[in-house]
Image (tube, rainbow, N blue to C red; front, top):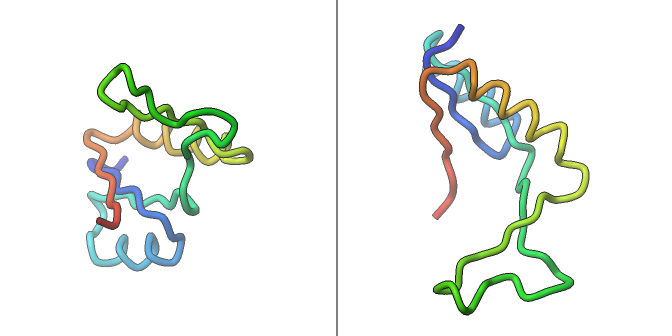
Length: 83
């Protein structure tokens, strides 16, 4: 079991990063974005300091389930996002 989970977008990056980090780290790919703002309604709540309302992108359910299971098994989870 790995101590740390790192989540990146690309499967190719996940394999490369996992080689550098070593056995204590498990690197998983999210295969791109997994959630987005809804298109059919306002994506932010203007009454609650413009808090975003996210929805899961269709077809990403299995990916999210896999990432959640991996996060439960890890001692600590890290997510790497582009600025």
